[in-house]
Image (cartoon, rainbow, N blue to C red; front, side, top):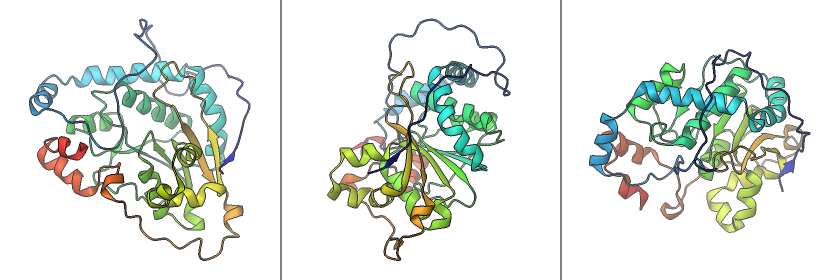
Length: 303
């Protein structure tokens, strides 16, 4: 089982003195307690070509930037964010995090969930005093990429399927990404030094293991299964007003003291190979189709 850390959750007063937007306008009541639109760094929903063209014509970059800013204002003043920060910021500061890599935000122009998850990483970036965040999702449109660049982000162009090597202490933010993305990341860094550089906000490892049979996990999440007993998992309380944005999310890092005692068989690392029916992520090949043909292949990918 995953090693849990329970920390006190006394709420500090919200801070607005960290370079954040200075004026947060009052917003009207939301319709419900769901952020509604489905979004994951995974198989895309089918989109009709005509609908896609219409969406492109109607794209308003100024409006999208305003909506992102409103989400940041909304989030940074919430007890959810202040509680999450109280749990994870001391660990990240002690680790002297040098990079944030964010994978799988989804369609920022279309999805409220995506915008709030972007708001979370941007608010966290300010608390860590980091100049840039690196972003990748194969479903980003060219206009969404441009918005992220306007917001001082670095947009990565190659789909590495989560196989990023941690060259320095790095926070990986994988909001509701398929388990194979986390599994690929672990495989790519499967040695003591690199695992010690990884700090991970993603779907709870404990929930992944609890909710799936071990035989399934051996094929689809082998490295998550292997590392679980050496993982410090800090659950992030899902008390934000929209309950479908940060649910089942935890902060994870790895107990390198325990890992030092592992024998050579533990460190054997075969590159993951997933069966097509179990695959939840968009692969390199599918990314090429998305790039070349817009979303013509979305229906095929979603099958």
